[in-house]
Length: 267
Length: 111
Image 1 (cartoon, chains in turn yellow, brown):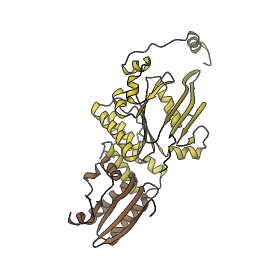
Image 2 (cartoon, rainbow over the protein chains, first blue to last red; image 1 turned 135 degrees about the vertical axis):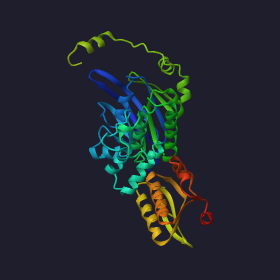
Image 3 (cartoon, chains in turn orange, yellow; image 1 turned 120 degrees about the vertical axis):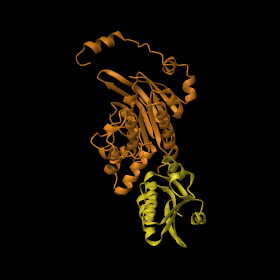
Image 4 (tube, one colour; image 1 turned 90 degrees about the vertical axis):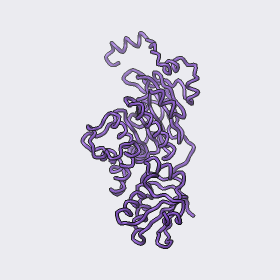
């Protein structure tokens, strides 16, 4: 395993737009090996857009994104593929393939990306189902699973290759508190036992405070702060306190911008 | 000694496979082969894990397959002195409650 002190994720000056609307404003963001980083922010804060750039689903228009030392904006297809093999991503909606059993869904990355023999693949994928407390459910189809089970199956698939970097989008959303706490515990143990570096996008405060080494707070495309749980809690920034205390935000309206968005053809 | 590797020796009725270093996808299939080959020569296999600094799930899969092989053929299988790194991964899947785990071969023999 490559032990270096360089950050595993290094984002510098990242800008992102949807149409004319700027979603990320020169974001700088870096995550060290072995860290559990939580990205927090309300809807529309840009957290999903940031995540999509980090996992290479979107190439940066402006700014750089380096993952495991590779500049994803400039990397060739082969290089990108090599990086992606070291990433695990658990999407918010699960993104399981509905025509495949849970076991086949989880085993899919191993079948696609490795030459391992079928017995090893079977054991590895079922081990991961044990990790997420879905042991014995490999023959079920995704349509037979509850929302929480889909989420856990998706996590099993995301970690089946023992990725160096794991991304987890909204692990707790829609889960009951017990399952949610179990997932938090699992995230901590994946880092400790399998040495994963983990980025979790969430708006669940309780979960964020339980698992994070550091929290990055995004708001309307800007990083408000990156700090430890204690630092974020103690922040005097009003927007951060709004987020922590679930206060509704007052959105500032730029009249010209607003009118352009509504009226111009290519806005 | 290299930073990772394995060594098979005989100790009476037992084969002892000592593994050390980081066990990952790059060579876990070698470990698997050695585990299965050891049963061609002995009915009991102990895998010594005190020198393992990291093991991924492909390495754990090799151990699971070895244990299953022993159970189905009436042989014996034991893990000896798993390091903290190994224990942490075993515990993730509750395999610490599945594998026979001993401090040393003497304990495995009388276990």
